[in-house]
Length: 147
Image 1 (cartoon, rainbow, N blue to C red):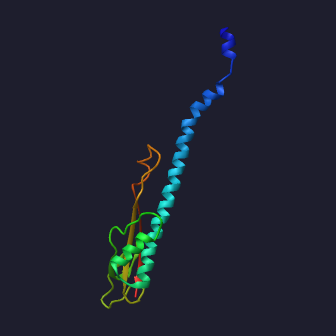
Image 2: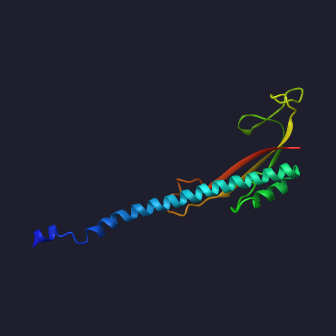
Image 3: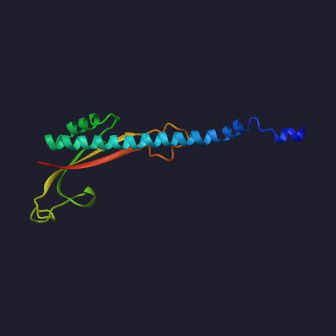
């Protein structure tokens, strides 16, 4: 009788499935959150670009830029930190640098007015246990020269 039970494979697939299913579900949940994270990053970037585009077309108005950021993407983005206006030259990494003593930039063009637009939105992973993998805030920045 014991030999017969040892050779019996009825239900083996169900036991294997029970071992594999949790791992499979964790992978699917991670992929789902990854897709949501990437979509959110793109939407926050689009919101920052919408604010920069608004500033380029309408000039400096912090409230107008903030409104454009909030309406610029389907995600609930906010202009945080607030938009800023700076006079100078754009350097490496979109950093506004002061012009030389003649008011010119290193490329020998006149200094200009630049608006820095920031956008942020919260992100909460759907899958439990992935909270440490994804940041809790999605952020983007755009810099535009205005007339």
